[in-house]
Each structure stands twice: as structure tokens, then as C-alpha cells.
Length: 278
Image (cartoon, rainbow, N blue to C red; front, side, top):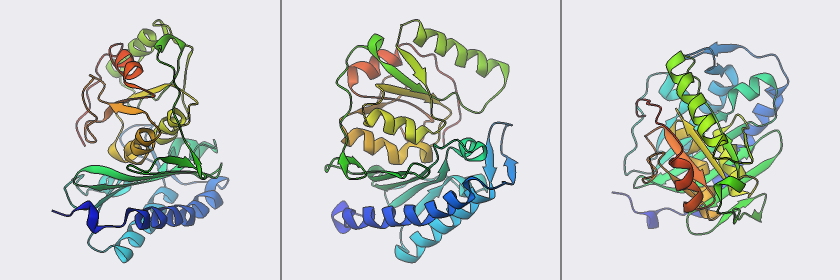
């Protein structure tokens, strides 16, 4: 088993930041250009040639620099590779979080690089490319955006909270019915509002930045929120399972919040939407 002390996490962070900026330039160049769009599982689950190109660039750079490291990438899994998180040093990669935003030129599009050791997230990088916002964290050393330290909201009342949420890509009537029931349950709590950015990682970073108090989603994947999870935790927030237990990277559901009180209050408002594990 690899030990954390064997790896310089600051070096990992610097490598990830530089890599994010490199692939970010590719994303930015393609942002306003016509795109070739393919569908994955549903009409709302999109992928472009840029997603695939950027993931290829990221994985090649990781293999060239850290040949013993493992990786889990969104497009690699879509192409058939197993989503297998072990104790070995592992990068969890989303080349473009917010592909629908990217397709529609809506400026919330992020490169997400999470680095895990012993199945625990140690480093997180979320780069909001169109807005040039670089969110970073190393476990135990705080969270930052463009060098400014982040601190979550101190609100403890769900009724006084602004929430973020995404509603997944499934469009079957049974799932949509549960999605709408959850929206109704949360809004009638009540809360100030429910917003969304179209990017799981950037929704979580909004909570880390005290721009919102909480976020929830079902159907999410580990690559969507691995990197952002440590950014929120290092900003003083928490991420839990939607049923109130500890976060499970493979469970495809989460509540992220500025504190445990808000997180638990929100989790009690939600009904479960079942998805297969990653």
C-alpha cells in the first residue's frame, strides 16, 4: 500500500494546476466554435470531441509524469474501462464538467482533477475555464480560489439558505416524478431559492465560496465531484450521503453543505433516487 508521505502533494497540486491551464486553453479555443455532439445514455447526456481530446491529453500527461499512478476518467469509463478505486495513487478526472454548458456556450465549464491515496481525496483542482477561476485544495492546508482562501457560509438555518442542485440526465417518468417531489419538498421547507450552474463541481465550489449554503444531486459520478469535495471540506464544509451517512465516492449521490446542521436538515427532505454504483 502506498503511503501519503511517499508523495509530495504540493508537487501533485502544481502539476495539476499547470495541466488544467494547458487543457483549459484547448477548451477555451473550442468554446465558441461549432461542436460535434454525441449522446451517451440519454438525450441529456452529451459528449463532444473536445471532452475526448482533453481527457486523452490529461491521461497522457499523468502517465508520462507519474507512470505508476492509476486513473479514473469519465470518457475512459464511457469507452469501457472499469471504474475501480483502489488504495494506489489514483487520479479521478472529468475533462469537461458541464458539457451541456460547453455545447450551449454557457460559461460554467470546469476541468476537474482529484488525486486520491488509500481511497481518500488528498488534492483537488477545479478550473472554471471561461471565468479563469482556479479552485484548489490540499488536505489539511485549506482551500483557495486564485490564491484567495475560501471559507463557507456560517448560516445554520436551512430556511435561510440558497441551495444548488442538479437533476440528472434521466428523462423517464418515474425518475422525473421523484426529482420533482424533491424540489417540492425542499422549496416548501422553505428555502430562499434553488439555483444550478450545470456543473456539479462548480456548484460545490459555490458552497465552498459562501455563495450558497448547500447542494444536492442524484445520478452524479465520482469524477463530477471528487476534486470539489476536498475543496469544500478544506473551506470548512461537509459532504455526506443523501441518507445522512459519510460520503461514498462510488454511490452517485450527495449532499454538500456549509455545515453538518444544514447537510442533515437537507438530507431529511430528500427521497432516494436509485442509480447503480460507479
